[in-house]
Amino acid sequence: MVEIAPKPKTKPKKITAVLFFLSLILLLLVGGAYFGLKSIETKKQKELEEAKKQLAQKETPLKKLEDKLQRCKAKLDDLSLVLGSRLIGTEIFGFLERITHIQITWASANINAKEGEVTLTGEAETLPVLTQQLIYLKKVPEIKSFKLTNMSLGEGEKVNFGLTLKLSPSLFK
Image (tube, rainbow, N blue to C red; front, side):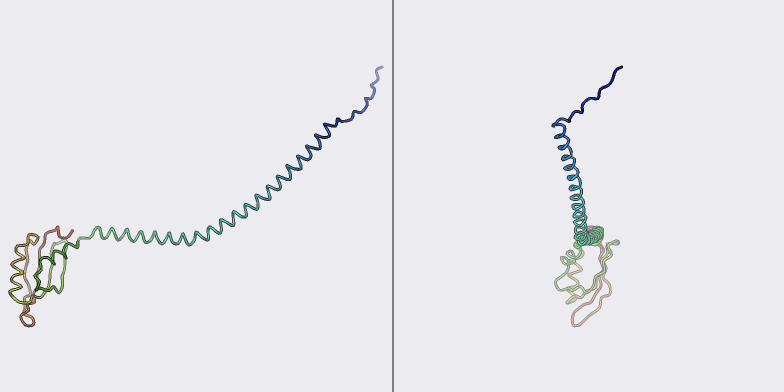
């Protein structure tokens, strides 16, 4: 019969023991690094959230300013649209100034750009001044026609009158 003889216990080699302890130390270092980095991550996450809150508080005035600027821009766009579509240009006033006799004063003006008419009320220093003005108006090419209305004598030699001018459409642009 064959007997199995117990083998003598072999002692682990020193290298195995050293490697075992090194792996334990390495395991502890990795575990410590994991938990250390996890706590650093949590701390940095809290700092990031705090920075976001501070930034949001700083952005609120900036956001209000941006909203106000947007409203102002919208108003300016609306104004430019209105001004761009206006029918009465400033040329009409310069034109009236150029054709008016120096001794005539305009009291009021009613401008109808769609019809191309300007109705004026004014005062001439004398009747010959008004006559000179009317003669000059006949020679102005931008005036298609005119009509003198409501002529009356004022103080002294002054003459009050109304005048309706039918003008060229180019003056209203």
